[in-house]
Length: 327
Image 1 (tube, rainbow, N blue to C red):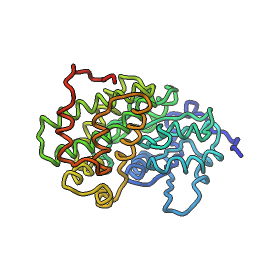
Image 2: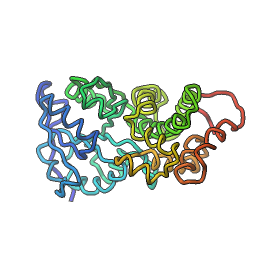
Image 3: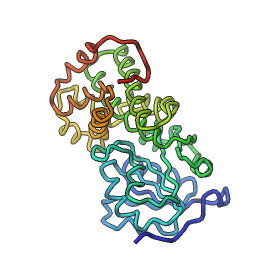
């Protein structure tokens, strides 16, 4: 049965009042966020499936629920929590990926599972390498929500220390950009692992940004989001840093390692393979051209040798440059 309890709106709370926050998912990103906000004085509780406890108990006496589980874990967690969700309790989704079965984003899955319409849904995304934040290095991110009053209230309460938050009103575009940049980061790892040089990497990332724009706009996101923190900003960070799991995965594949062995070596969630497959399924459905996603899937599925990827992309039909290509 759906929970009927309500929470006080964030916009009605005193500005300096600490928030009662529950973080679902205690991986690198969820754990780092929990520590950051606890140091700011907020009351933070966290849950991991490794705890072996029921997560629904954390929803009581709460001001904000933060979900930082992998894309593969979103649907099961939503099925568990939604029946107990207090009306009006905001959901902050920090999951980056596209679901290959539902072909949609994390926040859309929460809504499909019955998240109350009165519960504001926000997305947090940006160039946020968890290891750097945990070291106290500065970073910025974007809080995306259709309700800008809620976004602004959380911006003021959750910014601080080394994390500066901006807002936008395009949660869908923010999620799509954050998902697709993982695919481009893996491709950049392939490029660097093959030692193709700075020119090739710059060309790859520019065309990768164009592919991100195709999916973002095609699914209903707003094009300017592509050039913000969740798009270009996140792409620059994750496609050039060895701290990025998706980039490291590309490096390992370039060394000749298979995808399963690479994932075992990294021993953490790598969203690019699932997201690339989802993007290709969407491309088939809508008639989009996504050549980089196509080549990434061919490599991870063992249908193309890593060495042939660059040649395949360079031998495509010549055409005018357009940052957001049409099929």
